[in-house]
Length: 203
Image 1: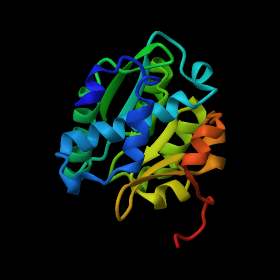
Image 2 (image 1 turned 180 degrees about the vertical axis):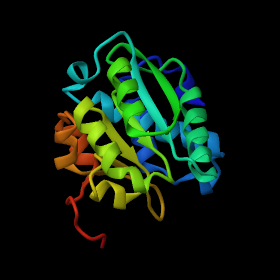
Image 3 (image 1 turned 30 degrees about the vertical axis):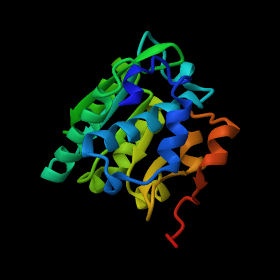
């Protein structure tokens, strides 16, 4: 895959545009390639965040993949993990990226991990709807961007969604949540995204 040779997210800008503009996996991509595309979009969004260095200091950009307790949550975790594994040389702001799969136990343990590792984002998988309030508190307290594949979760307080559409994935941003989680997204990203209203019903 072309993005394997891309050493920075800046040089992956074209791949990011392609990821937004091309059809989804059912047009021929295998699951790992589609997952790598989504992982690259997440990293590109982080590159648009002017608050990234403050929110996530250190020598690496850390991304948590927080898995729900059921089979669907673990399967989604593994898919994300495989996607990031296909992007070993991609950097954000000159820093390497480390994806950390986490089996969620409780908010206190997740908060402690976030306090130690300063993740820039946490991808929340299926099976954690009942923990949404606790996860949002961790995201706000530790200034971690919460990412979901489900629009309802974005409307209910996660910052970013990668939402499956008829032809392609779409970026949805809850600006209120993003600001509460410390993000300062540039206009370039906001022009590519669809802004959703917190708590509004899905059309």
